[in-house]
Length: 117
Length: 118
Image 1 (tube, chains in turn brown, green):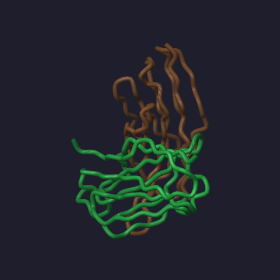
Image 2 (cartoon, each protein chain N blue to C red; image 1 turned 90 degrees about the horizontal axis):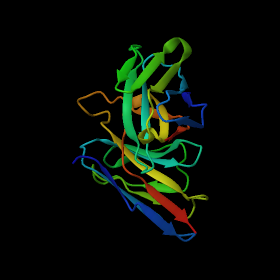
Image 3 (cartoon, one colour; image 1 turned 135 degrees about the vertical axis):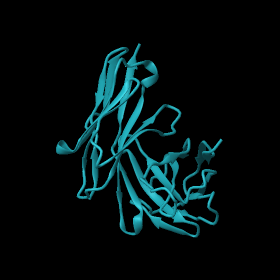
């Protein structure tokens, strides 16, 4: 069974600090996808990144970067020079193919990030 | 603009009443989903549909019902049998297994509906 663990329930940082959100996953499949979503106070989940299991290359997008390590089953998310607008709940998710091709998505419990000005 | 529209955004109902939440998408996606979000529990899947006139139970389907009569629409009814219906409900869609592009499971979400049962 697939599982996603986000051990950090809430994190508070002062603006301009760097912060890393941890995500650890469990799966028996060799082919899967990992995601990060951002949920601002408005409620809608916003897609940030997708990674497939065969691509361990780290990715940087502006102040955001992601570190995917299959050896430790982790897909961590770092925000550099945090800003107040980064305050949100962040979800890590794992997608695996079920019978019939349906992609079953499992979410972690989320990490609430508060950036203090 | 393409996207998912959920309504109403806020809903108050008395205990014992059925409530229907609307979800409409114009992304031409085959697959649609309903999730429930409670504080500290992440998102839990209620129902999903891969194609019109077909839907499957998710992890917490008891007390809920859905229909998929049109590709664009996937309404969720919270019935009186749902013991703890107060929650934030999110509708989502994905390309689906019939799309020409591989469905990776990437989900597109609506803004959610917050249901409070008094």
